[in-house]
Image (cartoon, rainbow over all chains, first blue to last red; front, side):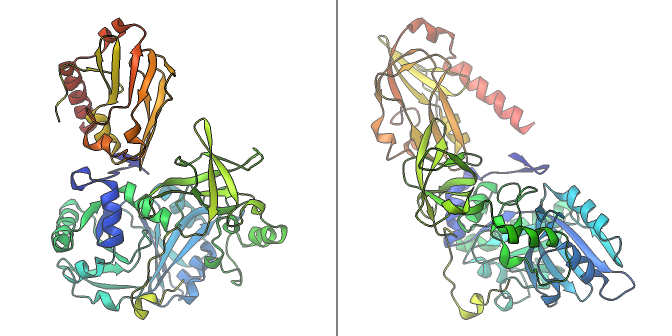
Length: 367
Length: 133
């Protein structure tokens, strides 16, 4: 168990084979993660229709007006500097009802941020973080597992859409086709009390037995999201990194009239990037880890690794790192300082892993 | 997995099998189970002088880097060549095939201060309790 944002969480479940087995289960079959540490903020309109939308538009860099009811997207809340308060998934529950799923480690900060910055809007903000247990069922067989547990039709839920349905006999549960693994999968939200949570967790494992489901910990969650180049708060996105540097341009809608951070981002794009996020693959023997320094061929320190690990899918050692744009070109040789040695690495295309979409329906990805 | 009675053990979870002034060193079953899937091992060159309590190499799993500390001073005679391509042997046979180095001990009496298997088993049992408390 490790402390993660105040939660005791398993890094892996060794009795079932451990991290690599969990990682492969998600890539090839199915795995389930208890991600109840994620926080949930609900924003609803007050007396004025549109109050919630206006508040979300002010807080979040993506364009929530484009969301249909039942649709979700990746976004972020920014400081006026254009750097990250947190990255979030925004769900449009109703015309005047939004649910923001936030990180555990930033929960208190996020809640205060949302409350402070929505004062001028006619909306009601609620912290529902403790109300839900959130389970992520991930992998190509996730849809088959879910079918056994719900009266909803999981096949009909498009990527980054959600529905409400009965899950394990619990009515009106949020079922979203979202995840943090780069694989197809679902996240379900059920009441957070211990008896219900345990019941649903066990029911998922039982329903998944025929597909060799594995319970998965934080370790596999990290290697899976790293292969898919999904950002982790405090690593690829943070209070000191801006949207352009993080390469999250496509989730940032500058054409919106107003959102916190917009002005700074407009200025930053005019002055050009100081650093950008690249994928590295180790050429020589050695594993890059978080915070290891990056050097150029001349021996100058040029950047830092934000996340690094062996990749169970690729069988190679991979990393994400911030380096100056001049060194970000594909094929550029860089060196990662691994303890006393500088180990050769190369800038490679990202994501490191991209799943092959199976049907046109699943391929209908929306941002 | 049992802890061989003829080995000596450190608090940092290395084992030592000493005979005639030579010692074979590895990491314990407890250490490998805490690390998880081992994917990388870095060992010293032959001839390198190890100093008691100082790091002489690393064992890495997917999730973590772990330093290996010398249980005693001595000179490296051999580093296990099999581990470079098969680091996972550390998970399957930590007390046998996955030995890390063989050294010529500078002072064999140093080993007297290490734990025997009974003391080591009591030590990790207490750690387990600590963790679940």
